[in-house]
Length: 182
Picture 1: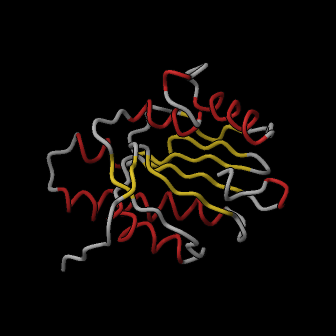
Picture 2: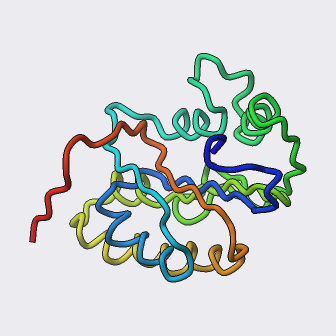
């Protein structure tokens, strides 16, 4: 965020965290939805580091640090502390949604004039705790959440917003080139 966004630019920054988002799901399901309205400036494909813990990973993204260095466990407080320390910002967030119990859809949304922080929870709950075929889950549940929840949020965002998309599972860069399997 710090290297890509200048808070004084007047351009709103949006951080979207997608629970357990894989790079193939980004390319096939999410990227086309974002490209309907926004231009993709850069991508940095990654692969999840195992093991991961959703609650710690999400909070680490908000905090900009490892869990051992957390000063609180509340995601909004972690985000505020990071913004004050590293961006010299003190945005006044309005909490639209803040629930760790939501199994699918938007579980967190903090809104301010300069910055928004949004978490979509759909893969962990719908993939790990579901006995149905993986491709069926992606083509029904996950695709529907993207179609309804993600698109509705995108319609509300400014046209010139700078959007950062990430996942919450400790990504490391994918080495080498992509391999397309028909």
